[in-house]
Image 1 (spheres, rainbow, N blue to C red):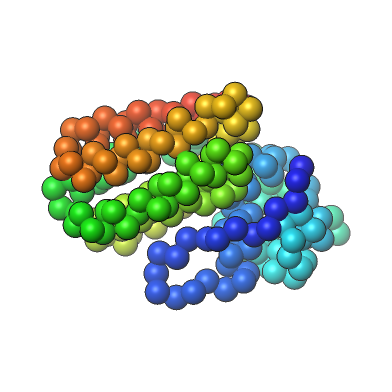
Image 2: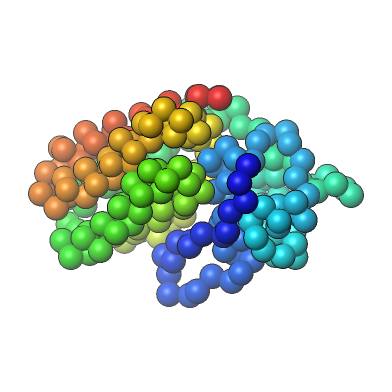
Length: 223
């Protein structure tokens, strides 16, 4: 697999993330994208070489991921990626649908158009990453976009819940979509969501979000 540099990571607050946090977010994105596979053991030096960073922040970040239950520590070897069951994935998508669809749809009548338009470069970044086949950048931009939208509802706890659910998800089918040339079409749904929000069309937002999350669950199932 081609080594990657640590990409730009989400800045949802005013504090700039530490190098350890940035590496941690890149590793989470690799987990979500399925580039780090369940059951596989990865060493900190090996991951550091892959991401073009030193081993220390990788080791520290992996310890953070272990506390979150995303990896297990394997003494003298590294870290094993934990598996996620189909039942867990079903539960994640059910909870996400209950939260994200109505919350995002409600923004059609409450969100400031200028604030919404500020998210368009992020939506375009998702499309660009899809076209380039850069799955880590795709996942990270997708996270920034959706959490950025949800933050406009003004409920920080809601954003934290969805962030945790997204971190625990796995999109095993992303690679197949890239190979089939279909990932860009899915990526463009983010622009559809913005356009529907700008048009103040709550039902259209609800329809696109429902379709979008349906695609996500399909990706989870594609192993």
